[in-house]
Length: 342
Image (cartoon, rainbow, N blue to C red; front, side):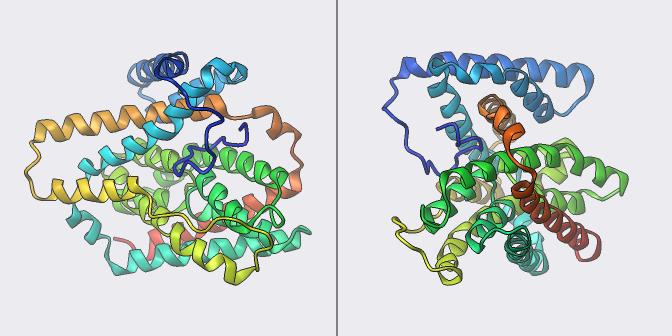
């Protein structure tokens, strides 16, 4: 269970036992206190809320060994993240989604495909096989830890073992956290407009929470674009899972693909309703604030759960495959943001 360090959007790993309501309380209390402290620091020092939530969560990482906190931490990292994404739909309209245009949508699909190919090439150069490259490249290209779990299920245990999956999850967590901090700085240095910065952040950052956090840390406008772009990448998980067996034949794999994620459908549904103007402005503002709080709580919980010691134990070579795919995704996203968007 410690391998589930990313926000598990798809519930790929079932809980060991059914948790009762009171079992969630200890972990949720810790997450709530950490998120409130992050909110105070963000307001007091003018720092991004998500960054403060990440740093405070990492500082509380020693609590991850307490089994009493696990149900609440798992709930915050999974369910609160999903509902935060759904409520984030009130921040955008269908007009803004269509406003991305066919060029942006085709560019997103191309970035995902080329990033996966880069992961495969880097894995082969490092002495690993194609399935490991698919796992690492697909995780970077789509949605981080959740994509890693889904891809590992599709590839099967004979192609990808638990040790490789854990390395990818740890590497994705580290790369996504670093991207959330560094990419907005790069966008500021390049003086990118909101739409360009939002595309860059949404198309290149690994996990959903970090992508949205980085976008809204840049500006509200960039956050809206980042949310649309990132969730478009998430929606590409289903066709990627369908194509994977054509790239490498599965051996002893069980289970099929992953259904279209309901939280993505919920996001676009709320965006469609918001486009009609029937949601009062006060309600829209309240929903946006709730989405921000839930996403920050999910980041706090995810940081607390991260197995930091394993990151130190992992060798450099497998992580370099993730680095190569990450660099490719960033460079492609930056090129599109500079040349084609706007």
